[in-house]
Image 1 (tube, protein in one colour):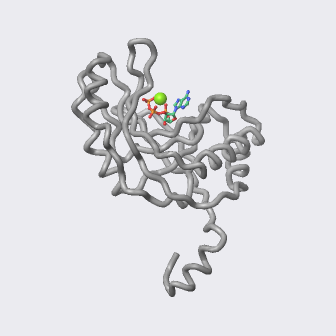
Image 2 (cartoon, protein in one colour):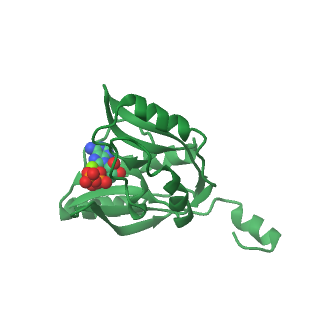
Length: 194
Ligand code: ATP
Ligand code: MG
């Protein structure tokens, strides 16, 4: 099976991304709202046994919850080719830490290390044929894009299957992030919930 580890996005954030999903020459297929996510680690084709080891290693991760905000738009290009257009993620050291923990868990489970620098993003489209000047126009138009902050409370192991129109992602298991030390006391003092 084809697997990846990712952060799901809350409904309201996926809703806010809708303003970005269109208006780019040469990009006809946009990631549908239900598929929008932030990849932490692409695992690729994994057999059942390795999937089991990866799941056990991911379940052992202890990391705190954090808040995140999507900010700006950018693209991965290769020469003149636009490979992917994405919404950016505001810098958040806790996300890099979580990524690093996922990376070491995956390697501990026996998979090959990734070795790439982690650039968190939400892919919006992988254009077939977008000229760079049209891309520049689109990026400039959306340069001030920013969502509300949202709380990341878990990360998820997904399978990815080929659908007729688009990939079909299935959440196989979610792993909870912990409430930071001090948050419970603070909530008690407020007389409220976390
Ligand atoms: P499709 O490939 O059909 O366009 P997809 O890219 O959404 O669909 P997958 O290829 O299964 O589906 O990818 C799942 C997730 O992993 C996506 O976030 C994708 O960007 C990421 N991903 C896929 N291949 C790689 C790779 N080689 N390296 C890093 N991330 C990858
Ligand atoms: Mg792909």
